[in-house]
Length: 100
Image 1 (cartoon, rainbow, N blue to C red):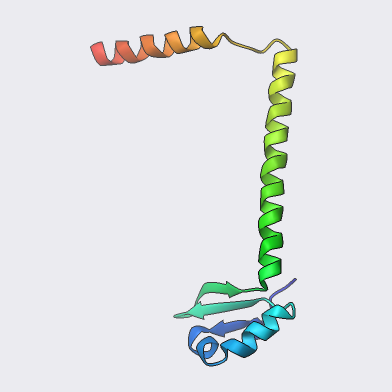
Image 2: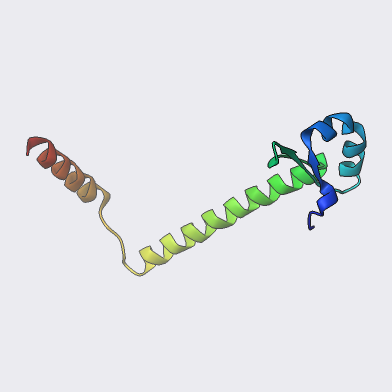
């Protein structure tokens, strides 16, 4: 949904018309409230906000699934390293930096 110029409201005007703006947001309009000429906050329907949060959680899950799939593909292709060996090497390098 595109934001029209009428959906950009100065904070002083939003204070005076909050009830009307809330009704418009509840009906599906999204309002951008500005402060000192800059975007400050958005006024949207609470159900739409819940939907946006759900989409964000789903996106995070998809990213995690993709990363797990790539990790499994690495294991299947033999691109693995021994964790104990890697940790030992990290400790050796850290000790060498401190000692040197």
